[in-house]
Image (cartoon, rainbow, N blue to C red):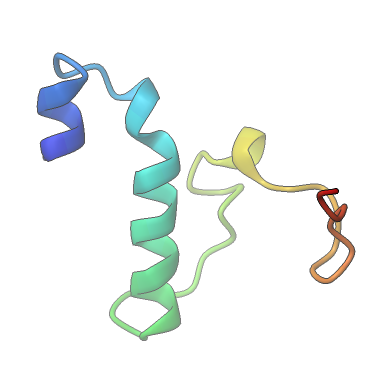
Length: 57
């Protein structure tokens, strides 16, 4: 809710936070596991498999 208040109740700036919240709930079995793409976060999904992220120099 803080994010929404800071963003003048525009949801777009808060989407990464919402994605992390839902992923946390699924990880802790507080909600059924669903692909994040199905929940509307396809554009926020990193295309690279885990462990293959570019290293910052």
